[in-house]
Amino acid sequence: MVVLYRPDAAVLAVDPANRCGWSFWLHGALVASGVLPPVTRDGGAMGVDVKGSYRVFRQFQQQANAAGEKVGVLVVEQQFPKGDMGQFESLQREIEARQTWECWAVLHDWRIERVFPSTWQSATGLGRVRSDRKRNSLVVASKIVGRQVQDDNEADAVLLGSFAVRRARASEAVRETRAGR
Image 1 (spheres, rainbow, N blue to C red):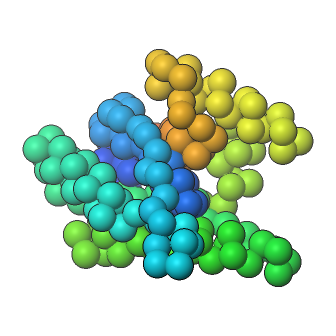
Image 2: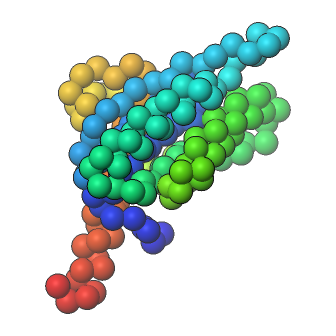
């Protein structure tokens, strides 16, 4: 895949779910990370906090602009549809969350990159067994952040952001090598 952003770009990485994990990277360094808890809607259904996601997005857009970055990149986890009716509601909520973040990005002229979990997870070497991946992701993300992450949603967002920044650096190195620099 061709990376269409600089390694020092403003990157907002999001793991879309009821509890959306997010991490913000500026000039290749982690600035902040966290989790947006779900909100209860009419009828008791849980869903993405639209206003909260906008607050997070605007906060980091303003930080990016202050640092001279006019355009950022939203890197969002793209889920695999499983086709299982038991998974339908969960997948529906994840799609709603992803689309909410993507709408903010479109409205503010940010680029959007969707990354499948298997792509970033294999690049981080977290393990093949789901329980191992989850446990390892919490440990690795906590080391990156310098504190205990709140949950696997925040961990995934931190690792997704780290993957996006590292991939952009590698892509830049390849372009420079091809250009003979």
